[in-house]
Amino acid sequence: MKRSKKGKILAVIAVLILAGLYYYVTLPAINIHSSGFWAFLIALLAVILAYVAFRGTRLHSVNDLRDLKELGRRKVIKVLLGLIGILVLILAVGTVLSSPIVNAKKYQQLLEPKTGDFAEDIDEIALNNIPLLDKDSAELLGNRKMGSMVDMVSQFEVSSLYSQINYQGRPVRVTPLVYASPIKWLTNQSQGIPAYITIDMATQNTELVKLSEGIKYSQSEYLNRNIYRHLRFRYPTYMFDQLSFEIDDEGVPYWICPVKEFTIGLFGGQTIGKVVLCNAITGECESMPVEECPTWVDRVYPADLLIELYNYHGTLINGFFNSILGQKGCLKTTDGFNYIAQDDDVWVYTGVTSVSGDRSNVGFVLMNQRTSETRYYEVAGAEEYSAMASAEGQVQNLGYKAAFPLLLNISGDPTYFIALKDNAGLVKKYAMVNVQKYQNVAIGDTVEECRETYIDLMQTSGGGFENADSQTETAQGAVHRIAQGVIDGNTHFYLMLENSDLIFDVPLVDYPEVLKVEEGDRITVEYLPGDPLCTVRSLDKTALTQ
Image 1 (cartoon, rainbow, N blue to C red):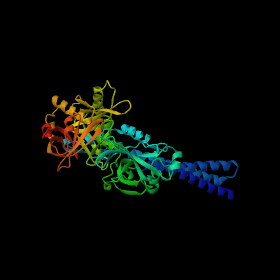
Image 2 (cartoon, rainbow, N blue to C red):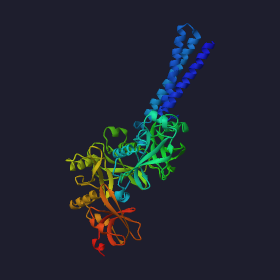
Image 3 (cartoon, rainbow, N blue to C red):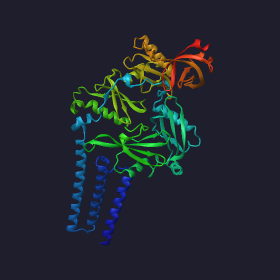
Image 4 (cartoon, helix red, strand yellow):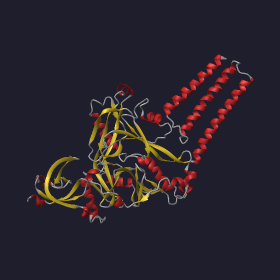
């Protein structure tokens, strides 16, 4: 009898240990809206069932069970099987009742896009703020920078996250370092990860930012300091979506942890209800409603989720079965997306096309990753991959490949801006393709050259750019300060006039006479306004001789 009781106690302990290990590894949220939670309960009951069945069989084989005991064991097995069946049924029925099949209208209304005016809503970005790199190119620069850090490269690698954010008014990708191996984690985890990498997407300037105190909470930790495990133990009921790595205005690293909210049935209608900000150094966490998220945070809603929500809105407009059969009035996003910096936020950009799969867009959408605000712009034109093919066709002799385009406002017209890369993944040229007339393609070695070629092309082809320079302004005064720098291998002079905070960018290749300018000279320039860097469109040569 004592042996039997001791065996039951050991069995209970074993089940608890197995359940604890399963929970520690898989980290399911204790939440009825989490399918992982139901799977955890089913697995736990299955382990208990296996033990009861095995234990009963073993005892019976040595003739220890008789009559009532055997009957009791069979009842326990039936109860366990019944509970497992009920849980499986709840999981299956909950999945069906939460699906778009029976909730098409609710899914269609998860996102409510507003119709916008492109020329009014989208600022004409200063050329020095255009993100020139995609994630693949950023990874090349990040790995190259890491390779030059001889004191770290043997212990750490660069994470593949590369979150795009706005940092101090600049488009930046930021990513942490990770431990190079479990052994390197073991020898370095007491100090943590010593740095992160930032890449300015416009200037391509890559910086490894060393921290006075290392990052202790990250995806590359193995035990309790693993960011997912840290969050789970702090918030056992929260269901987290994709985490992103960001830095605040002072450069302090944070994990931005959006919390899923299911609004349709048990498992349907996912959106974001809360966000947890976790200091990557100290592990301190703060949970807040998504509406109260501070403005320095850029990535609360994952891009994939926003695109999924818009596709529900576009395809389910006339019900679920219409989205599968007749498809009347159905729209969907194109394959691929990019990011646009606007109003100190990061917006996901993607085209909108019909579900018939033609090669043209009926418009495009911008979706705010912090607030989920969505704007739809009805601009018929080329689908992104058609524009990419047009750009590649202009340099087919060089074999360059086009990156997924950015959408820019060039003199009020929506324009695809495309980086052209060689086989090594390095950006070699730039292209601008008119969205509505994608046969008009301009190529340049620099962004400035590409833009000027594009405007000339549109003017000569009757593209409506006759007044493209009407947005330029004029400034006159004495030169207060001169500096110079090199961008993409080309020398630029930067001038400031007295009583003005504006900085005028003068490319030497276009205005060689700028070499004659000295501090105190009076000049006249026409320029495209920027904040604060302005692109010079003409420089009054006669003023230089006064």
